Length: 338
Length: 203
Image (cartoon, rainbow over all chains, first blue to last red; front, side, top):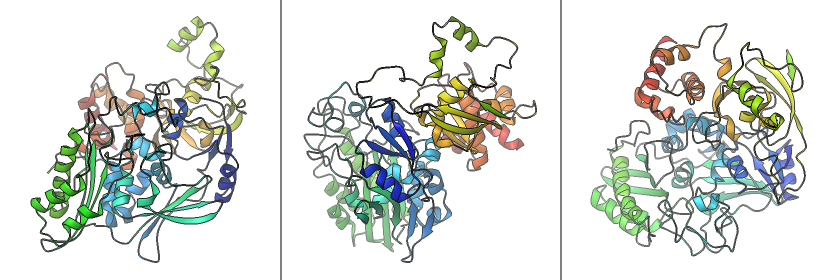
């Protein structure tokens, strides 16, 4: 790890000031991803700004009936928060499906959004990687790409976003609140993360010097009909091969609204409005779910080792929508998939 | 009492530890005080890290130290305070051997900068037993033979102590899920789950 200057931010404005003047500065909160990357020298900040003392730890109802989550709320506290468990249980479930309890105790809400890909080539500084070093190429496209993306890829990068929490937030249509040198702004979750395109070094649409202050959930939580179904190489403590956040609003057996967000398939949590349109007004049965899956995966493209993900995703979508329709969400401790 | 880095040391054991033997054989034992990578020359080094003062309460004793900000909490307890019960396994947050309790909550000490915990309370495996009596989890691990090589055990115990205070795990499935951050390569998992169940029953 290279040496760096350690400073503590005294308030949010101070934190913004400290990074805006130094492009090689990084915020540290939970540290679970940044410190790992610093040890590997993938990240080489010359200044590390400790933001853990900023007053961003509240979970509070908004006047509009939603919930505002401070950027420094630890993942465990968020998953176990009574209002989240009651009104947004899919968010609790998704958080508990990721990492370990130790890491969830450390990791912050804002940091979870800013997690970087776990692509092995991104981590290995001896290999080419356009995300780590723009213009060097992508070693994954012709390499060991079993865990890589099947949707929204580019010639420059086929990495996936690693978060589970973000998949549920994307399904819930959350909003990311940020502040920076140009003031405050609210970014719809759909626009927060980016596809790789020709600039995979940029994971998000945050501008230099901007800091996440909160994530806001709208009132609708799909508490009655939802599931977070995650498939991975072992039963716990592994990144997703495929993860599905599904939420349904039903009128009897008819789908009034259906939402599907996928993890493990793209550079950002993935949604497809056309696939969700297929669900609207249709009976909640396997045939409907399969049609939605076909639309969502129409443009999916596999590489040498990950083509299996396309069929796996199709089956997971059908299974997850079934769980949501029955009101029997996937348990994250009892691993049997119903 | 307040210990400083240069002040009283923790060599209270009357017999040589494995560490003493290893250190005695090392060519430059003082290098042990440096964080990993600190001695390596990196082309991207901009300026030397300025040492930072930090005050930590570890197992009930306050320590005031001046450290390189790169020092992880894991390296601080092992290399600066000689509390070598906490183990370094993967050093990447993947194995749980380094688990300690921060204000009662379990964390991976390898993925932290110790300076971030100024003013906080830390409990390591050395602090679990109280007044000479084993923590119920320690006794339960012995009763159930919940280890083989023992390298993961300090992390398993601290993690299980955190699990018990969380109060979320009720069933064996839930214990297994919430202990999944602690890898045991000897595969003592069934006995670890049994030991935790025993300790939960007693508390």
